[in-house]
Image 1 (spheres, one colour):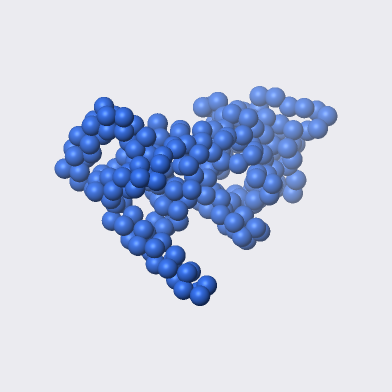
Image 2: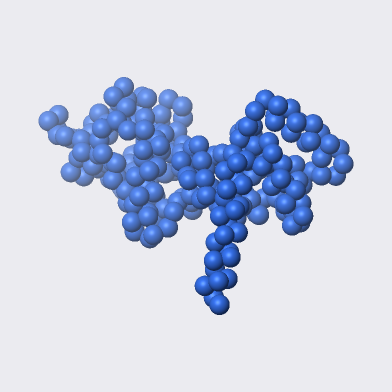
Length: 250
């Protein structure tokens, strides 16, 4: 990934770099061999930003040499890494090649250690993305996965019936739940139980259904979805936890 300086501010000494695919990188400080970077407007989510930072550290990128050049570093000066200022914290990224996924894991660990909370979305105030918009973007950019070819054909038949008989909300719930949970499991590497819990909580802001519609949607997911069996086990565990909670209160 090649980068180049496209603008600078001589008063605050912030330099902007543009990548070949037109992403902007803002370096607000370079001190003791460490570049401090924060996201600029234009990033859709944290994954996209992390991938760009990963590209900066690729051995084919000229980002490091450009940064050291504009800050007037001596040739024998060593580049020691990157500090990301994001979601209200500073996260150190080592200077060696690293994937975007590894960068996100580093950010998640820092947040977990500091606040005891889980960064389960790729969204935050730095990117100005609303949760409902984020879930919707996954809906349109992901395909629902099925347990088998037969299950896929059966769901196609069921979905055709739903959308032709005022069952659109059930159809939307099934597809949204499946795609968002797939994203959390496959991209964010969440455990099944966490992914299902987060999905159940988050899609309430996107798809409004009645309890009986939600129950019907879950039946479809169990029958056709690739993670249908795991969904059954999660539901059983939820019931068991609720029963135990009642017992503990007695």
